[in-house]
Length: 246
Ligand code: 6PG
Image (cartoon, rainbow, N blue to C red; front, side):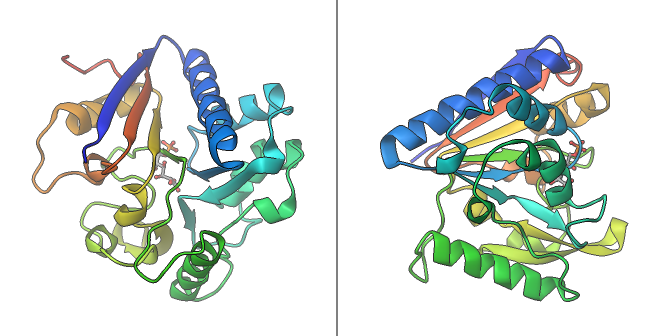
């Protein structure tokens, strides 16, 4: 099995978010048509705000009742905290669409023990996907971003989560932030049918070139997102793609 990597460059951030929304809906419709539901893990940070807001504004009529939202990672903070990814997604999307509460699977990161929060989220995934002990959940779509250091989700360079091969979710100590993050692991990312990286802005141009055209050793975390039987779609605006040679 191999993975396919596709690169789409859009002129502006607005074009990028529109193309990303179209792809989100395309994948969602196909999944609902094929299996009656759409299983998607959302990314945090700031870039996807534009996508989530557009989905809320223009796709309120999408089959959100057949859509199940998960999170690729979460900060170790309560859901009402301004740094919470759930807080951002709720503010930009969830609170603006009609989606059953039980369809939204947030990480209970208010738990003082990040390892417990990670374990609880893993149990939620295992229960929802009805997994056997060695199975992996296969998301129809996992949205990801990339940080200037090449991290994705909360898989940071040099962090212990990078080498996790069996757990689905871990609490990952992030040295530079002196805090834990809760994150899906590479086995889950690389089981996805499709990963969509959404990257915007000149401040990402260097890392985009390193990830897409560099040969770092060890590889950057974002380079390790290679679904064994899936597709990686890099959606960039021209600013983020500015330093690509190809
Ligand atoms: C997070 C994300 C993280 C993010 C990148 C890019 O929790 O912050 O999971 O991986 O996607 O850091 O963030 P920006 O979109 O804010 O640049």
